[in-house]
Length: 124
Image (cartoon, rainbow, N blue to C red):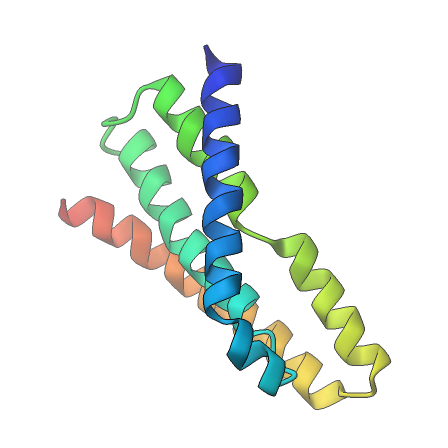
C-alpha cells in the first residue's frame, strides 16, 4: 500500500511542478533568474512544514497519507536537483551575483516557508 501511495503522490507532485513551470515559462524566458523553481521550492517547503507538523505533532495523518504527501508528492514536487543545475548554469554564465542571490533566496525563503508551515499546522 505504501508503494502505491508514493507512486500516486509522485505522479501528482511531478505534474504540479510541471504545471507551475509552464505558468512561469514566459517570465523565465525573459529573465535569467529561475523564478519557477524558486517558487516550487518555497511552496514545497511550506507544504513540507505543514505535513510534518500535521503528521508528527497533531498526528492527523496516517502512515499511508504521510507516504503519499511527503515521500510521493513533495519528493516529486520540490526540485533541489533543478536548483543545483540552475546555480551551476548561472555560475558558468558568469552571473555570480545572480547565482549567489538565487542560492541565498532559496535557502532563506524555503527555511522560512517550512517554519511557516509548521506554525500553520499548529494553528489548525
